Length: 416
Image (cartoon, rainbow, N blue to C red):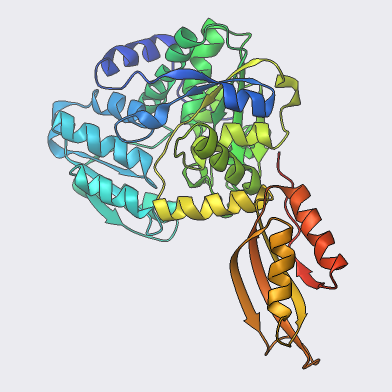
């Protein structure tokens, strides 16, 4: 890296962090998933960090940092900027240790995370429309109120805490051949890579980030943090505009490769986890599975791979919308526009064709106003439940054979 003053995190520091976390952090299971293994052709083991008390791995770094404060810092309290999970970890463990916690969250932060932070006793300040604005306000308040600022990822003590997860993986799946690590600012990746490189250097450490917020890949290419323009991503916990200086310096020589995943793959991964593993996982936590479903890692076929299900804090309404998006990408929801004769029996004819094709109608909109210049025709927007993409093709063929003209059909997104 270009900055020689960048801090490092040693294996001994992560060992010490594990001792501090003993009894304060759940030792989550890492179980083999027969269903996901069959789906992907990879032997998948799921590390269930979403079962931590606050619903994510972020507790590890938060607790380690809080446990090393000076008595004066404990008295004054701490502050952080966070979109959610880091804030939750600080709030919960701050209450446990008797440390006042203030968190600054952007106004778009998921309501469930805001409510739970307050429930855990933290002072929550909503500021700005973007994370950078929240971070700027947190820095200002830290100086004004003399509070210790705990960075969500670019803090050596936080990095060391996150790295403790790697020890558990080595104990639970000692013959693992690769681990897929969701990456935002890089705290988890840097901590885990330090441990895995030291204790099992042949194990592949693969970082996964959303294509819409690929700041870590940009930083690795430039050998220093690079500010990028992020776009909306379902993996909101990974939506960081600039990777950490410490995390980049640590991870660069240790990470085998970075993978970027698309939004459709993230939606499908969340759907698969809900259906096959019966667990609710937020977009960031589903990134590793998204990389496999997106066809990014064909070389891992048949190998033992650990997926880090890093968090499950997602608003139920948002999750339901994601599931619908995943179903559409999976070819199990199909929407189309069709022009019908505006005479008695036209809609019944369409319904009969769909019923005979085995499609279940979930929504139908009958529109005369925007059906075009031919007043004998009516425009119908129809949404149906389908089995798969082959079923969609069958429905299209049946409608054509029965004289139904598809006006606009949504092309299903390819899904594994």
